Image (cartoon, rainbow, N blue to C red; front, side, top):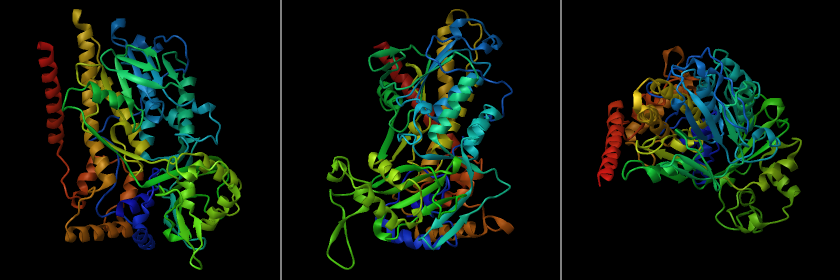
Length: 592
């Protein structure tokens, strides 16, 4: 319950819905929200800066890169590197042209010390610049770029952030709509804090691509509509259908919660070294629609959460204003349990098909197979539950968008390590491939961008070409593996902290007195927000405006958890033991 309420209060949320089984308790808690932005007593916040945060200072060098499909050539800055021996030049593959993959390409190109021969970026989806604005897909929803995302993008240069910022909508306000007549402002603009930017993922990726194109280098090739079928870490190759690409010196997976690069790490890692757990966050599900105009009955400057008129319906609508006066609406609910999810009216025994089964049918259900849905009737059903949408232009188109989508269910992912063993190609995973929280923390995109910064910094730190005679290949490989293992040491603790802060005690229960103390503490924080020396800044304020490490926040909120968070030394020892175990198994296999 409290985890869900925290998600509701988060401005920068991800698409994870509420579980209606708790709806009665949720409604009570929402009433309490008028006094406090209900903060979970069992779980806490999330952020994703590493324990030893990477240097995020703005570089004075300006990367020059260009998207093309021709033959790659050397970056114009290679003359500034400390060696001219082409054997040191790096062939890099990045799987996933989402925000983290594209930012990683920018950061690698920005570095004068990395001798990059080429960077191949593979993306299964089409070029976002070619996708029509209303066409839905994996990038349909709006993201919230807070201080962490801004810092990551600015680590390239201010010009890149400006290109991104102008495509989004600055917003810090949050309003809760109990009904068409009752609403409460839960969060307002703080002039002392730079506001977050709400931006569609298509627009974010387009800005990063266009800046890469404008900076005009032939060393980056972005391959769209490329369905990767296999990643071979022994031969350092990537297979797009039957087409073999490579070999690569470094492979990075920025390919989401169903990462094929993560699967390759599991396949090619020695036994008992690499492991991960992944789960569907059922029964919650969601769909997203875009509209050209913000609903006229809602505050155009605020993110808004609308509760349905029928509180037991179990569907909520999250409305985000976007650039140009439009909006993104995320409908969250639960997968229907039967083909005909019905609700009875109070005045009769007549049963009506429920809105939930229409919007969120299970795959293959009767409702999903309906070939001629009545758009007009469904629009009426939505307006009956969400009357604040009345008068919004294009409602029929909104309904058509919802009906044309397959119901989405979020995933969670937690890995014990983010890099490969030394006997295969140097490989790393970033973002949701390493630590997905299904949007519960509201920091998915921000943390993925920070991963890219951390990995790029580790490469700059450890990949230092130098004269070494006949051992160049061995030294080159060792430095790359040192880079990705150093990245794991930085990123794994904060990945675990992010997971804890998103899912709380994950089924475990705090002792009653500790739980009461936690509730009181959170209430004080929410009411006073650290003012007058009373309490601390609320959880979601830390998420949106703090640069504190996720690990620091998790440890500061230790009292809310059943299990203690491991120490830095524990993480170091655990990862070193995994590396040692992997090396021993490789040596034994080689000897045999």
